[in-house]
Amino acid sequence: SYELTQPPSVSVSPGQTARITCSGDSLPKQYTYWYQQKPGQAPVLLIYKDSERPPGIPERFSGSFSGTTLTLTISGVHAEDEADYYCQSADSSGRVFGTGTKVTVL
Amino acid sequence: EVQLLESGGGLVQPGGSLRLSCAASGFTFSDYAMSWVRQAPGKGLEWVSSIGDRGGGKYDADFVKGRFTISRDNSRNTLYLQMTSLRVEDTALYFCAKDFDGDHAFDVWGQGTMVTVSS
Image (cartoon, rainbow over all chains, first blue to last red; front, side):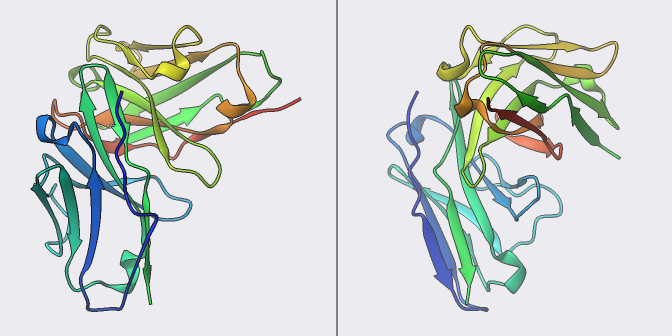
């Protein structure tokens, strides 16, 4: 299996842009996904196949990929975006989650 | 409404066994691969095991091989995780999750069932 590395924390003011990175050697070969998890709740799928949004996910959430790094961008951060965010990918041996990033809205 | 409801968690001694269940409703259960994901208290998400829509295509994380067995009963719309030789480090909230349209993402999650391994 392989590892997906995220920064432990990101702080952002309301209305500003938050960027969360996810890096791993296997990323160029696999799609990657993003989840949001608020305290005491189950995760919610935000982004699939690197940059697609499921129905109901606000447009301020977007995903992009460059080299071996995937980025989740939250444009115009709202107070309710304060949460933990996880990337996730898969290979022939199974699935793997990133280390997680706590986003704090100042 | 699409829903997953886990049950079967509890307190167990090291070396003990538990069987978790996940009852699915609101979608055609037999059309989707399913998985278990866990989260230790205060820690991140950790994939445990996945099973294909018809019960084949099983994949397990390295840390559970030989100890946990994933299975499903499509006639009962239920996913299972049989856990044996439990360790203190298996203490976690165990989520059941549905695969997203044949992709490797998870689009529906249950609320989880807590497993505590302690003497």
